[in-house]
Amino acid sequence: MKIVTVIGARPQFIKATVVSAAFRAATEVEEILVHTGQHHDPSMSQVFFDQLQLQPPKYNLGIAGGHHGEQTGKMLAATEQALLKEKPDWVLVYGDTNSTLAGAVAASKLHIPVAHVEAGLRSFNRRMPEEINRVLTDHVSSLLFVPTKAAMQNLRTEGIREGVHLVGDVMQDAIAEYVTIANERSTALSDNGLRSAAYALATVHRAENTDDPNRFNSILAALKEIATNMVVLWPLHPRVRNRFSGKLPETIRLIEPAAYLDMLAIESNARLILTDSGGVQKEARWLNVPCVTMRDETEWVETLEGGWNRLAGANTQSIVQAAAAALQIQVSGVSTVRGCGAAARIADLMALVPAQPSSSVNLSKFQDRSPSQGLHRVSN
Image 1 (cartoon, one colour):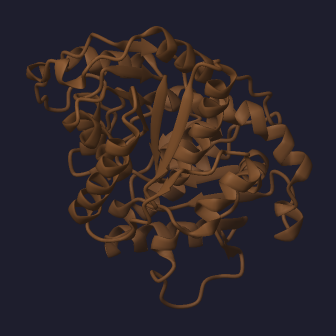
Image 2 (cartoon, one colour):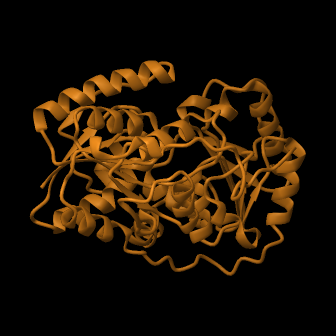
Image 3 (cartoon, helix red, strand yellow):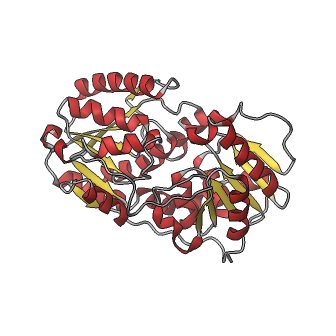
C-alpha cells in the first residue's frame, strides 16, 4: 500500500512522527511525505525532522504566506501534481490547517480516498478558518480517525457514519513517547533562568487573536498583569513578532519558538499555561498543568472537565480571573503520561480497509447546523 501524507504545520509534524513510526512497523506500507511549507521557519519545521527522526519529505512545496484562499489554492495545485506522479492508494491528512484542506481536496478531485486524523472536531465557529477546513475535510474523507466521543457525536449529527473509527489521540502517544526524554535532555529551563512550577507559559498564534488589535492588546494587558506575580515565558509565533508597541516588563520573557523537546519540558514544568492552541490545551491536561484558553470556544471540550482548562476569551479581566482560579488548583507534580495506542490503530485500520474512490462518499449527507448541543462558549 502506498500512502501520501500531506503535512505543513508544527502540530502535524508531531502527529506524523508517531503515525509514520507505526507505518514503518508495517512492512507492507510505503509512506511518502508531502510538506506544503505552510510552517517554514526552521524552529517550527526542520527541527522536528531533526529531533524526532521524522523521515524527510519527498516533496517540499515551499508555499507559505498569502491570504487563506491564495495559499490553499497554491497548495492544492502543487499537491495535485505530486499525487499525479505518485498515484497513491490513500492520502492521509491531519487536523485543520490549509495544508489539510488542500491535501483532501486535491485527493478527492483525483478520486484518491482520503484518511483524516483528528476528524469530527468542531468549535461551531464558522469565522475560524480551521473550522471550515475541518468540516470540509471530514465530508470528503473515506476514513475518519476520531480522537474523542464528542467528535464521534459531531459526525453522527452531520450524517457521517461510514468509515468512522474512534482511535484516540495521536498527540497523547507523542507526549508519552517524548516527555521523559524532553525533561532529561532539554536545557530550556536553565537557559531561561526558570524554576519548575514557578512560571507561566503563554502561547498566542491564532489569527482571530493576532490580527485583531483589540483582542491582541487585551491579551497582552492580561499577561502583563499576570506577570506582576510570576514570570511569563512567551515563545513567539512568527505571526506575533511585529505586534508589540512599548516596553514589556522584565517578567515577560520573549523567546523564539521552542523546539518540540524544549516545549514539552517548558510545558510540563509550568505552574500555569495560557494559550489559544488546541494542542497545548490537551498537552496541559495530560501533563497535569492548569490551563487558561484565550478563545471564545474550544473543540476540545473534554479538557474543560474538572476546571483544569478554563475558557476566558480575549477579555483582560476574564483572563486574569481565570488564571487566578487556575492557580488555586493543587498540582501534585508532572503526571505519568501513557500512550493510548492511536497511531497503531490508525496503521492497522489503513492496512485492513481496502482503498475505495473518495467519490463514493455520499456528499449529500452534509447538512449545516447552527450551534446547539455540545457547544461550549464564553461570553465576555
